[in-house]
Length: 414
Ligand code: LLP
Image 1 (spheres, protein in one colour):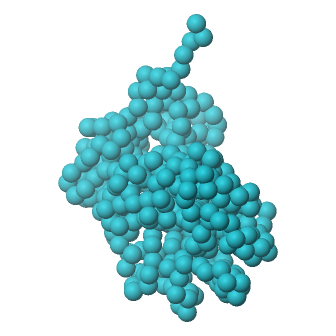
Image 2: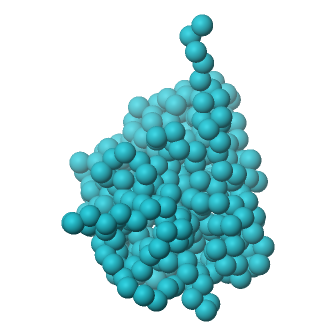
Image 3: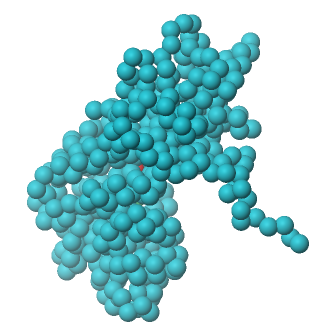
């Protein structure tokens, strides 16, 4: 299934030619397919079959209100990592009772807001955080529902910047300390132990590390039961990879089936926190070629999207496929696709064979996750517009920023 297809050499999103979107909304522009998100959510949901489960979409992957609202209407829950993300979820009509709060550095204000909203669970990442949560809940006359995020010390075999479940990472509580901290949590008056949580990394392309982590979680679950600690849900985090290039990650069905099988004899509700796999391949970044520059060493295509719009290539040397919006015949050259930002690291793709002329449109694929959400205003570049296509309808879901927006909060010292 793909929402992005060529028809007569023209790249379409659902029933809309991308060229039409560029003409109407300008470039650079993020374009999402609502059908792609809907279908993916349903594949996740159906794969669980009869198993009690909750899908908590990781908001950080793409936090546009329209996307959160679409997922909320499908019944999705949310994984948040800040008070800002909580506010977005509430604003988008998300259900706080389906929302879990992860992250190593929750501030007292964020904790208060989440308690006030009655979220489903705090994924607590340290003993000190647990104590602070207990104290704040006490002040508010509340009982905080808690999972400990346990670090299972599993090698996710992914890029080191996005691997989170090894003992040298800052995330989670070491498995060896989990028992002690759970019994502490069990005794704290304003804490209600509710679940057990882990998340081992992102863009995993194999099932094995997930299974290894789940195995360790189930061992711990058994130990907790003998200690009299009741665990109602098991949160196995996010991390399923997508295909950017030639990766062959497991299918969503295979991944969910594997998790369900391993937890077969455990009655706990299963939670997952998918981000990238939910929206990554549902979006692209539309950009226009402004200049072609041929040197003795290289051919550069200078486009109007840059590292501030899409940081992944610069930060992780990530590969994103780059497609011409109009397929043309003619001589192809090997291009460096670069942006206007003043950094050598500002590229979207290296060594791409394309036939290009000035003003051509290009689509940077698989940009739905960690694209717009990691964008910045570096070089005083207003952030791109975002549109969502639904069949033949195109909705502007975030207007292009203006330069006035960028300095609106700045003041001269009189
Ligand atoms: N749950 C927790 C606690 C997380 O930290 C993350 C992602 C997720 C769920 C969702 O993981 P996903 O299903 O998307 O793999 N900026 C990087 C990815 C960073 C992921 C951070 N945590 C990138 O562009 O590749």
